[in-house]
Image (cartoon, rainbow, N blue to C red; front, side, top):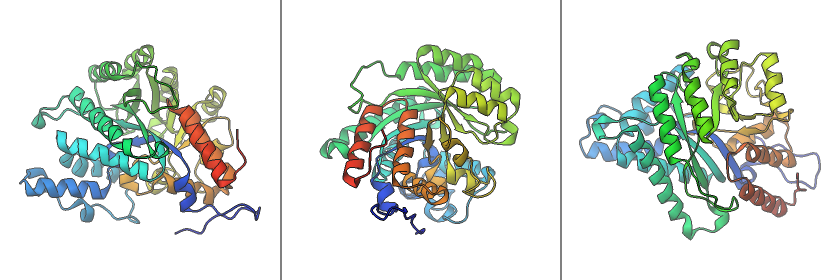
Length: 379
């Protein structure tokens, strides 16, 4: 446990894990595959091994074989973990559904009350699963989980919407297929924003190995998605290779609503982003532990962007890989950047402002939290 930050005002309590866990949080940058815990993977592995599944038999128990906390992967080993464990174990209807519901519960237990979960629609021929089937399985699992929450008090419920990701290595036709799927499963309902609507596809994302692909080949697909009314978020300036002026201007030409990571941005484009007040999904532990940024946590660009008018959403990216919950990310931000209780709550409100749905309910939950904790409202 890290030392808590103590506010100079003696009447205000410390910021600790209990505080950041109780804080109603909004998670906007979480990959489904990377959010699967080692425990969930191990459970899937044990089930498949008992059934004689070849993929499971070829792997060691994920609870043991995957690197423990403290032995952090580079960005290259990050992709290797995806390929070797996630995709060899979570590869049929049952395991996809189980993993999805486990992720939802893990985030809910961490105090997340609104989650935008993203995933790249997968084709799994061995299981007879098309990309559309995959999306149906995930949405059905989220819908089942939503129904399972009825016995909990409303304040403990988690609202979840789905973002479909286009991988940078896909072909333009594959990208358009995902846009078609996203349009088919996006919500057309007008449910009150104070309630938790059924899960649906809410946005499109560009992700994948940032050293691969030409983003210009996806321009027509993302413009179609925008025309359909889908929100857009893109992995932006993640590594130097994906941070050329040409690539970044191409991405901005799609009129994205949010940017993920946003690390290697030239000054002139920072000004564009600030002027547009784009939402930023910033992932402290992922960036620092995968050595995507320099200078440790204190050198992270969170400090720069938090001082702007851009809504900042602290996010986990891949909690199953980096083992840092969203509550812990808030604790790190408090410790490393000297945030007091009011500032931490204001940070949570920044994520709400950047969210694609669920804002009214989240504002109400944060207001209730402020009253319980006797924190002056930041509204």
